[in-house]
Structure formats: C-alpha cells, structure tokens
Length: 127
Length: 127
Image 1 (cartoon, one colour):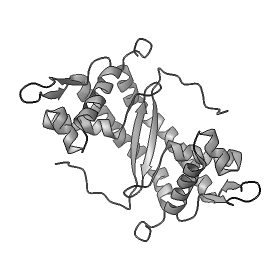
Image 2 (cartoon, chains in turn yellow, orange):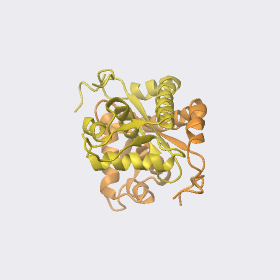
Image 3 (cartoon, chains in turn brown, green):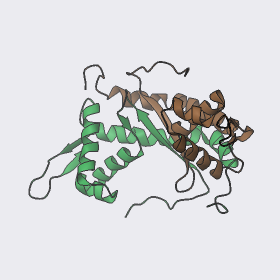
Image 4 (cartoon, chains in turn orange, brown):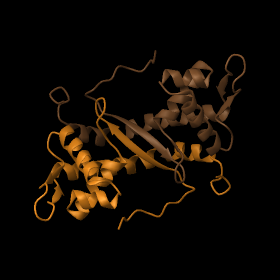
C-alpha cells in the first residue's frame, strides 16, 4: 500500500516538524494522514492504515483545519457510508510542500547527517 | 533560565529528528539535554532546567550512549555531590552537527516554509 522504500536500517533518515506558534505543528504523522486521506477518500480508512483510532484521526484533521486559513480536508462526517473526505487545494499544497521540504532537507543536510552516521555504532552488532 | 529567544508566534520554526534504524533518534529534546549537560556539568541539573525527572534524563543519556560508538556523555553517577557529567568529544561533535543541521535546514527550506506559512491563519486572530 505505501510506496516507501524498504527501511535501510544502516542509513539514518531525517524527519521534520514545522512548529507554528506555541503548539500546532505539522510533522510526519499528519503528513502521512493527509496522504492516506488522499489515497482512501476517508478519514476513518486513512486512520486505520496508520493504526489510529477514528477519534484521533478526526482530532488531527480538525487541528490542521483550525491552524490553516482554509481547511486542508473537506469531509462529510458520518452519514450512511460513514462520510467521505478529500484534500482541498490548500491541503494538497501543504502536503506537497512538506514532502518537498523533506527532500530538500535530506539533500542539503547529507554531509552533516553522514558525519553523525559515521559516529554511530554499527547497527548490526548492537541491540 | 533558558536563553532561548522569546517565541515569535508568527514565524514557523522547524525541528528535525534524525532516526537511526528502527527506534533510536536524535531530536530537539536530546540535543537540548546535551547542551544543558555541557552548560551545567550535571545530568540531574540539565534535566531540571528542562523540567525532566532525573530518571528520564539518565535514560535519554544512556540511550544516546548506547547508539553511538563512543559515549556522548561521560559521567560519574551518584557520589557525595551527586556526580558530574560532561560531553565527550563525540558528544560535542554530535551536538555541533545537529545544530548545524538545523541551520542548514532553516536556510535551505526557507522558501517552502514561507509558502506553508502563507497559508496559515493569522495567529493573532485564532485560538
């Protein structure tokens, strides 16, 4: 279902969080939730693919919708088939830019990440 | 007590986590802990500046020491004065590179972060 590369345990990866004001933030969890909503057309289904309760998935969506000028997710709550959801244009823009940011970061930070990596214990021997 | 700049609520900031293998990671919390150990010369005192229990501070230090080839923190546990701690050369290198990484990221990602920021609700009006 997910088209991520298989985890290469030796290679550190970087995750980013964008923190707005004091609390609200956009990190890997919310980004993945947006992506799964895009794929599944449903907040509940998206949450399930992430082993997340319906309630929590909704809470995260509401948090995002509150922080941005326009909602990122457009949804019909409940209803016979449990409602549907899709990303708005703002939602697609935010998700795209978050993913781009990850790429830029991995590239720009490669040398420093490599340096930190060189100090790591060989994962194969540890734990 | 902390010498961080006052929160500028309008400007999003970015935080990064470097994830090694499946679980171990280095993020803003551990980086700050290293920094505070450097400043205070004590794991307990460092933890206190972050409102962190002694036990948790120790656990995080042990986690870092385990993941890297050489310990990042050199410490004398307990003792009459509660022991002392300092960053090793590896610890200083890791902390320095993590901070550099943050700078690089903020710079390289500025345009995308700005774009996401432009979609944010004006913080002053919200919440």
